[in-house]
Image (cartoon, rainbow, N blue to C red):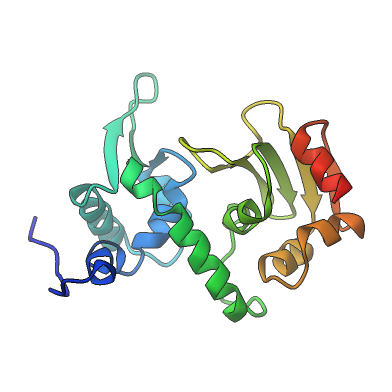
Length: 208
């Protein structure tokens, strides 16, 4: 593999961009924050990326210590990609980028793809506490591991156990929350987010 391109600047920002500054890299990290993913699943949830570019970025990420590739045990026997601890440390970077970028989110364009779990990181930032949260949108179901210090921080589909809280909301409400136009607490008070469950997170959301 050829050496990566570098800004050749003795600056931590430049060094970081040497590793994650290529197009698609941070979006691949976003997907891998959900835990181990197969190549085909990554490609399906990164509309617009070519197979060559995705393969190249995954190799770069392995070389730079952001991710690893391993084979699942039988009967799966498929290869999956997952973040290393260094890769997982990009979570607050992505959350900060998401907060900074929400002002430019605007209305959804006709050409914009959307996946339900893309709302996971904005919602995760707004949850105060620890626990498993299941979220139902029109586009689908996903779950969050609020306060998790290791392992996946979210996942597609139903929660892998009894959630501490279940949230049901429409896409318009979730978009307004993600754009910072509506607080999660206010959305709950106004009945735009339905909260169920008996865990501490559910109780805190109902009492906010």
